Length: 338
Ligand code: SF4
Image (cartoon, rainbow, N blue to C red; front, side, top):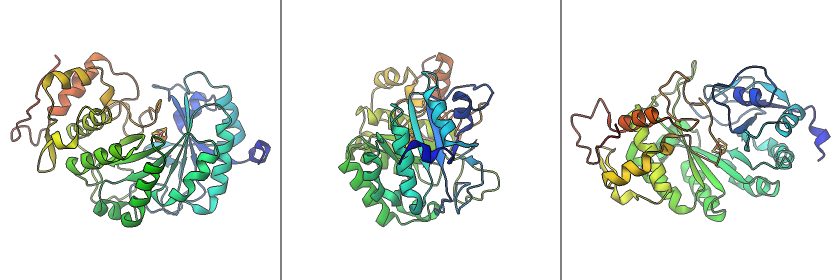
């Protein structure tokens, strides 16, 4: 299908991306390094935490970010003329099988822009993955979101027993090309999360994109809660060190589902965390999702840019600073940079 066919099509663009592409006149506090686009023709999914679920396509938000609408042709021109800051394109989609061919066509158009493209899918859409790779996508990100069957059934309105094996099959079939999105705070423990992350890494997943559950005004999400920052720092640390094959799940000590030891020496932990990379947004290369999870006023769950030394010191201290359990649990790896 020619690009002209698309010229009138409407696509949503994250607010920060719209500034970066010159579509909106404003300043970005932290510019996105990926162009985030959202294709929504009415989502048939029922994710408890998503403002777009149940076909709310007029809703402007996804997570806490607003996504204004533009013509696809303007977005394509914006990407063509964008600064070198934009290193990747991410086409986020909602669950609607009836419009998969349109998504594949848009993916083909975006792939021609010579920047790596990823497309996100619902876990029930793994059959669509070959079409996306044929259309030129470099990677596919799957919104698994939950780490266990019970939490999945509560929040995803879908069936883990049929979805998860297919996600796993795709990860194994396309090594290092399938990423998984996970939301911490939906009700899983640190132990459940770490075990799934370890399993996905061992299975050949390209990357885990970590999100902190963010309550949305007007959206009731029972059983989910904003995670304590210390708990989120431990999940970030596990994900980072596990992705680098520096630690394995068998080394980790848990008490009541909480990580109390990473099973590595203080010197390794200090060395590996000292650049702050563990606390940055995770996922595809060059994906920084500025303030997707949090207000710029903080607390910052996913740092969208390189951390300053004071930020590293703060993030590291948060790792061990759990007000609920600090007096009860001896964290064996306790140390400090300051
Ligand atoms: S990790 Fe980032 S760039 Fe990759 S699919 Fe997820 S949101 Fe998009």
